[in-house]
Image (cartoon, rainbow, N blue to C red):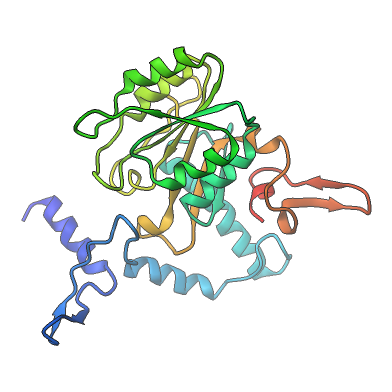
Length: 282
C-alpha cells in the first residue's frame, strides 16, 4: 500500500457513520455509500473530538472578560488567520469574514459592493444560482460563454469587456462546477478582469475541498480579489462559511446586518461601526 492509499484509508476511517447501514428496497439493510459530498460532507471524528473539547471552554465571543470568554474569543480570532493562510490571503490587506455558508457570503458581498442598476456583473452559464441571483437583484448580469462541451470560453470575457466598456464592475465565477466538476482557470480570468480594472470573485464551494488554492499577492496580475466557500463541504464544523476580500471593501459603507458585535458605540443619535471583520459578523 503506497502513501496515498494509506492516507485515503486513514481518512475513510475518520469519517463519522462510514459503516452505518440503512434500509433498502428489499427491506434489508446495506452499508450506506455516501455520494453527496458536493452538497455537504459528513463530519470527521477528529473534528467532532475538537468540538467536544471546545465546549468545555465555550463562552461569549467578544462579550466578556471571564476566562472562558477570553479563550473562546482567542480561538475565534485565531481562526481568521488560519483560514487566511490556508488560501494564501494577505493578512495585512485582506479580511476574513465568517458567515453561514457560501450563499450567505455572496449575498453579503453583493450588498457591500457599490453596484448601480446599470452596472454589469459577468458570470458564467455554469454558475450555481447562489452566484447569480444576488447579482441579478443588484445589477445586470451578462454570461461568459461555454463551448459545446460545457467548458468556459475565457476569450469571451475579453469580448464582454469590449462590448460593455467601463460597465462590468465584477467578474463572478465558480472555481469548479457543482454539476460537471470542470475546474475553471480562475487566475487566467483574474488576469483578464484586472487588465480592465475589474475585480473578480471566485465561488470556491466546489474547488476548495479538492485543490490547493492560492489567492496570490495583491500585486500579482492573477490575484483573486474575493473568495467565498463553505465549511460544511470540507469536513469542517457545521454552519460556517467564509468570505475573503480587501479590508477596504468592508471598511466602507454599512453592514447588511446591524447590531450586536457590528458596532463599537451607540448613542441616541449616532453609532460607530466596529472594524472589519467584526462589522460584518453580526
